[in-house]
Amino acid sequence: MSHFALRARVRAGLLGAAILLSCHALADAPDGSWPAAGDVVGTQAGFSEAGLAALDARMKKAVDDRQVAGVITLLAHKGKVAALNAHGTQSLDAGSAPVSESTIFRIYSMTKPITGVAMMQLYEKGLWKLDDPVSKFVPEMANMKVVTGKDAEGKPIIVDATRPATMRELMSHTAGLGYGLQPGNAVDDAFIAQNPMAQPDLKGMIDVVSKIPLLAQPGERWSYSIAVDIQGLIVERLSGEKFGAYLKKHVFEPLHMADTAFTLPANAEPRVATVYAWDGKNSALAKTPDAWGPSVFPLESGGGGLYSTIHDYARFCQMLVNQGALDGKQLLKPETIALMTQNHIGDLRVFGAMPGTKFGLDFAVITDPAALKSAQGEGSYWWFGIAGTWFWVDPKNDLFFVGLIQRRLDGGTTALRNDSIKLVYDALAAK
Image (cartoon, rainbow, N blue to C red):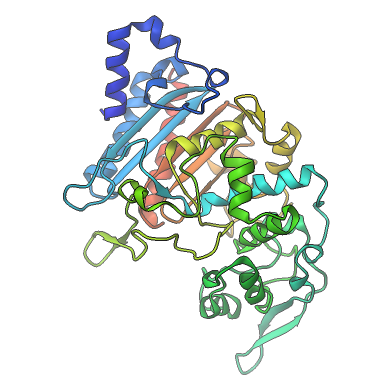
């Protein structure tokens, strides 16, 4: 049993079931303290005891088997915390602090949905429309080129884009942009060689990106891309604020996400978990170069630059479950959340051929759980980070789950994520 679960049981034993049942509801915590270990109600949130134990055991096993240094997870259902469990340590170094509610993680691409919320706040103000050309706000992208293949000598064939990409396409990864994640083609190789993410600011980033051709004509294919990093630039230009300052004022402060930021003060170092990658040769975890220090990106990247904690990201997820509101503060309208979590890519396929899955506005969306062979509710939406962090929101079942680890994405992290989904719904079905 994790120390969080133990604390919850001790609290219940000392204070009695009646007091445990009276743990404050979301609306009663305007100070932003929710969720914390004291809010865990276990089976009273609608899950079986055996099911919750199995979920926690799977997370603990990942630590015991040295698959991850540490892990912390949070499961909430109908506004109640069913589980908040932590195992392991912040690093594998001797004397490392245990993972806890205060541990800070690099969330990488789990930054993207937060950027999407910022974008949609500006959408609600009428500052942009889904069918606006991206070049209306980013004129650097007015005359993009497209790679259509190779000539007889193996050189890329480059043509003009038939039209500018739209904002809808930018937010659904169908604008044709690359990211440098699949080397071996002219576009991704150019991203790797020119490294737009190494620029000192977002203007420098777009100056590089705008000179790299597209993978496909806008709207022709889904391709995970630098699109959300570009959205960070658009937030700056539409709001007149630096991207990080905008997020702090309009997202983090209203949600009491005090430990979520692009850069951290030096005194936060003891709370930052070390990032690892799997060393297949030695069958062990190995530290990555970005174990500590400034964010891996020198700029405020809308696609992957944030640090966060389990508390902070859980508050973000509960706001989404609540259709844009938390503790009496409305960040987005319910209809805007609905718009973000619709299928915006039509018949295009996500990740090549992931069944039952489409893409909304900065979220992957489950449109056919049966095809995906998942127990998640239809309309669930999710994303993950390259260091293994993951979350999903299931509005049909009024629940969300957040898992935070620091292991660069590979088969082991995918298995942990998939197992958590199965175990959560097994516990819900067996209540």
